[in-house]
Image (cartoon, rainbow, N blue to C red; front, side, top):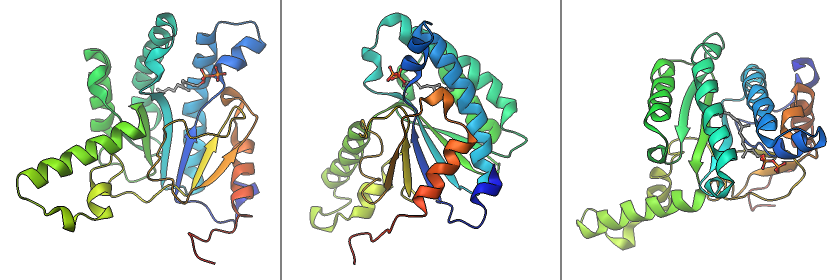
Length: 239
Ligand code: FPP
């Protein structure tokens, strides 16, 4: 409920590590893929809520560069869910004016999924509401490596002197170029780790972990994270 958080400081950029779909299914003696199905439904519902709270940028971690290591049946089920949900969100997010961008290396996906990813971005490109970054085949170490390679090529081509490389050069080649750093990173499912998510960008992010499993992470749970965020004293290395 928006009322719970009215008057509070709303973070400009929120990142969410959507963990716990597998355990949610296991608790109900269901296959892991069913957990992902409910997780995907929740992704669409909670994104629409968050867009109404005043958050400007939401980055959701949907599939990491390491998730290919999962059993083939699970990866296949996830790819099917991505396709289905992207088709649905082509219309779903229109009313909320949500702009969708995908971060990560999309070239590894099937031609059909790549087409849907491109189409989802295209139909939403002029929207003015919240920016939703969906991280798919995303890994922060890979992202940093790409930035370093681009800068190294610029050095080789005499476009830049190594002495003149700045943090801004590194940042301008990350997927999140031009966006504010995340103020708050939420992880569901009870673990306290970043799992290769926004490593560079989260230098001063506030971290919030909840035991709640992703399919159960609802509006009230998001409000709790915002209430706790408002109790943090952010110093950015100062006093
Ligand atoms: C982690 O739970 C979850 C994932 C690897 C998949 C997340 C994907 C979705 C919620 C679907 C989103 C859909 C779109 C279109 C973006 P886990 O399997 O690691 O759970 P566990 O830790 O309980 O095993």
